[in-house]
Amino acid sequence: MKKKNTHHNSERAAKSIGTKFATLERWIETGVPIKKDGQGNELFKNGEPVYIDIPTSLNKFLRWADARYGIMSTSQSALTNYLSSVNKNGGYVEILLRQTKHKLEQQKLSHNKSDLKIRLNEALQLINEQNKDITKYFLENKNLEGEIKALTAEMENIEMAAALKHEAMQVTINRLNEQLSRVRNMRIVDDKK
Image: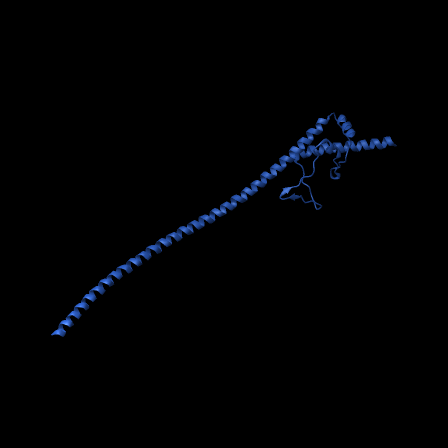
């Protein structure tokens, strides 16, 4: 009975290890998945995707268990037996782990680049809108400067016209004062006669 149970466990372990390898190979090719919540929505934290935990060492590879992928924790001896049955060595596991980690780093970098591109585009759009506003205000300012120049010229013309009228009035007043002075002098002369 124990032999059957041991045989059954070794088959399950071999199947799980094969599934682990296939899963890592798929992730290396297509990308490490993003964690999902209970409703199946991808999880993000501070705008960054939260990726599923990946094994990064041989020990973590052996302890790795995930029912969604049909993966269970396995022993070192089960791994050794599996590798010998598929003509691979322990270095194969290390290569897969490094490639998976590298793929995850590329994904994070790629997401950061696309996020940066989005932020850059938003910043450029904001700059363009501000430039339009600045151009609008610049034109309004130019128009106001033109109006101020026109009003200043008009005010100078009015002041000049007023000064000319004032001079003309002063000349008229002076002439009238002279005439009045003569008229007074005439009375004085007449009174003496």
